[in-house]
Amino acid sequence: MTTGDPPTLECAVALIVADGRVLLGHRSKDRPTYPDVWDLFGGHVEECETVEDALARELDEELAIRPIAFERFTELAEPEAGPYGPKRYTIFKVTAWEGSGPRLTGDEHTEIAWFTPDEARQADLAHRVYRTLIADAVG
Image 1 (cartoon, rainbow, N blue to C red):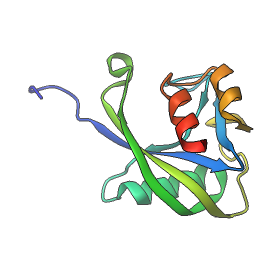
Image 2 (image 1 turned 60 degrees about the vertical axis):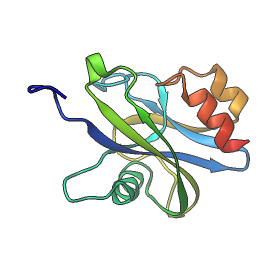
Image 3 (image 1 turned 90 degrees about the horizontal axis):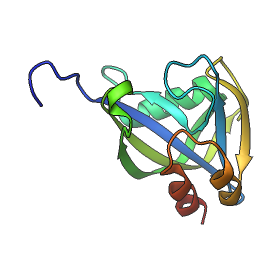
Image 4 (image 1 turned 90 degrees about the vertical axis):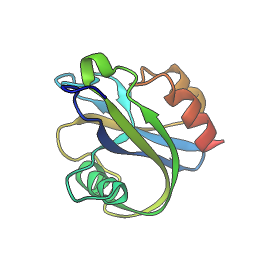
């Protein structure tokens, strides 16, 4: 890293899996990053927060759920670091949760829906690699 490079933002992301499908959210058209595409749920790790804490907080904020069965699945670097800055995504496979959701909360997403791996392959996803991750997580 050279002087002046922005720090890498850590992000916690959930692959929410149930009954052979994955839950995706359609991002609002006015989002500054990845607008108007289907995406996984999650966000930035805040100061003094573990990546697991960030996962729980983000899922509560976005879907009104708290993960109770989850595991680290993989890590990805931001593929569009030029426009969006350097990020590292820790992706968790979430297979059980509690709470009043999943239901749409906030304004980050306009819709949520369950997708089979085949349906996800046809969707306009935020990252191409999600097609493979979804197939691996669900399969």
